[in-house]
Image (tube, rainbow, N blue to C red; front, top):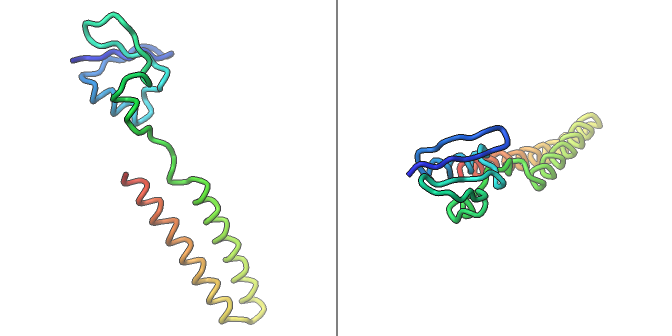
Length: 117
């Protein structure tokens, strides 16, 4: 069954509700856009359709607040490592560098895991 989606920019036609759902998840269809089922007369907001209401909207969650704080912590620890190296405290600088590696490892895998969902 075909669906028409009315946005402020115009109307689009989709082959099925699955295609509308995929467009909704990708952010091409907004919750306030109106959807009309083929043969229907009632335009409904996309957010009120059960399939779309359950669908996950894609958000840039790979770079959320905890990621930002972890990256800032890695930068601060990296600066500390450089300062320790300059003072001649190589072992402490090495430990700080390992901390930077651990934090950036966490950020990388967290972003990868978020992207694969």
